[in-house]
Image (cartoon, rainbow, N blue to C red; front, side, top):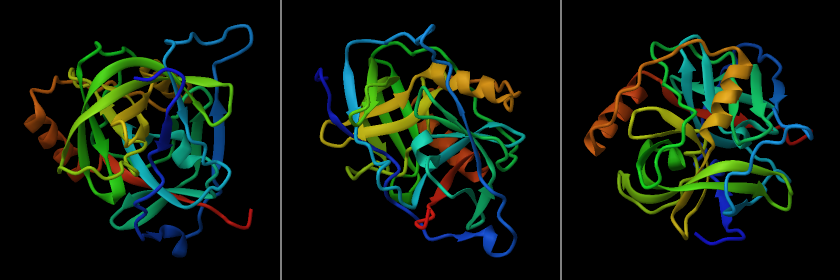
Length: 275
């Protein structure tokens, strides 16, 4: 992994599906966006390593987009990537071919993560961990590149720091090297952004954030930054049990089950171009 930077693209820039909004039938609640940031001049968060990534900044030209979200509490708390929800006029979770609008989002000020407080309730939530997996261990990324359900298998390179564009503010990330995909392919991972990355022990250890197709790298949020956000939201009470993955077939089977039960869904951003 090169020091000093690489061009990494946010993962939610494409694969937008045409869906109807419930707002065409019922009033859409105004979107309330809060920010949680535990950093301060007195207590800066520690730097993870001297490896650096530069993530291309797309905030200057926000556009409608699609990403991935996953349930972390059965009562309707969902995690996704902060760049999926940032700058949106409305945000919606897919339900039966419609985008079901949400009204409360908490964006992390320290990592590329956001929590939806009033999302769809589900029967199952995914278990989270704040611990970094061992270097070289296998990771399972789940989401919707180009709108299609895809499982990406990777190997953990290690901890790193990333910054957006020319910003001097860095965020801790985990860097992974892609090894395979199901179904197979080599297209952009755009759309998997916001989806979960699982460690081999069955815990979610981050949110898919950015990638570089040329080098086959995937960046995910730091696990402790993810769990700080869920604790601060006070919307996550569930403590699901994690079961270790026994291999690729097991990961495929669980992904299919979570899709069937709506635990992992597409999330949509609609941008008001008049703003």
